[in-house]
Amino acid sequence: MAPSLYATEATFFTRNRKLTFPAVVCSLLNLFKESVEYNLSVLSPLFNQQPVTGAAFSLARYKIDISFFKDLNKILVAFNNKEAVVRWKGFQLIAGDGSTVALPASRQIKDYFGIYSKTAQGVHTCLAQVFLLYDVLTNVVIEGRLSKMETGEKTLLRECLDDLPIKKAIFILDRGFGYFGECKQFFTQKRDFCIRISGSISTFGRMVKDNPSDDFQVLWEPSDMEKATCRCHGQNTDPILVRVSKIKLASGEIEILVSSLFDTNMFSLDDLKELYRLRWGIEEGFKKLKPKMKLEHFGSRKPAGIFQEFQTHLFMMNIIATIGNIAQREVDKKCSKRKLAYKYNWQNAFRFIRNKFIELIYCIDLENLIEHLVQCISTSVTAVKPDRSFPRLRIKKRKPRLHQTYK
Image (cartoon, rainbow, N blue to C red; front, top):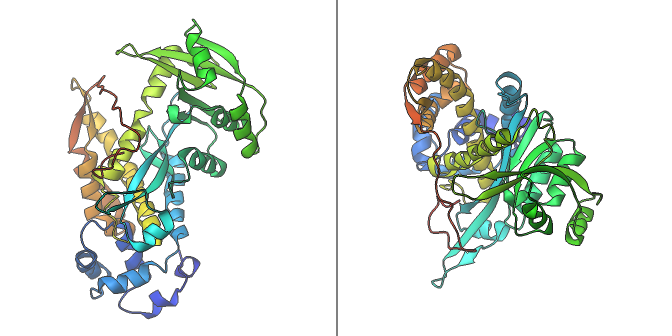
């Protein structure tokens, strides 16, 4: 892509022999987990140029518009949706969820994102809201948004759905999205969904919880508050017909699922239990993005740099998914006769690909490089232990964020 399409001052990259546009882009895509100067000293020889100072790199990076990195992600997602999509009963499975990300408490960050909390010693914490749409069968991030904390995850979901071209999919969401307005949007856009709802918060939830049937259809009449929310988003307030399914867990807890999957022959109660279980893939996605890739170790103290690095992390996740899915087929063949199923070690796949990332982006001997990466990834595997479960953590509201792996 030509620099002039994305760089606010393209001449900075073409006339300055010390730092070219491709060098800046590839350095950002390679992710900065060490110091800027160290990364530049390692990467600069690959571009046949002398290392530059961190200050010079910082001046250059902010001239690249965020749309450049968003477009790179869209290209990769479109490729996966066309060539490598995996379906469940003919549907792509897309989970949605939100989280928070800790930001460096610089002056610029405080001015843009605000201060989330302040300790008695005067230490400030700055957070951003993150939302992902995640293909749980291929581990591809379909869409990702980062925003100020006052923009809730339900608002980010609405924005993602408005721009999403995918139609043949089932969206799986947890009870943080189990409200009339969200279900109404799915029906309005003719999208299928399966959402867990609380049996105690809403009038509708309490009503269906008391229903003796485990699987039934019911008309959802919105409350006055839900009607007001719909009007705020330009939606009508007509009731919607939904399927309610109750799933009993091994712990004895009852999950209440609301869905648009009315065909009980195609989607049995056991199928819906399996479907919602697959939602856990997005929790693993956040684990990859935050503790494993260390997203919160930002190399920038400006909002523009935060948005850049968020998008480059999503791009790296999707590169790993693209090559990892090829490697997984090799793992399945090699381990077909073993008692347990196996999957490739994601953390090691990240290391293998990051070490060869520049050659990958520049398509240097691409066929042999892909073959080499697939071989490395497919030989580093971990066992998949079935029916694993963990107790639900009860987090007090506004608990201090003590470490960066806290979701």
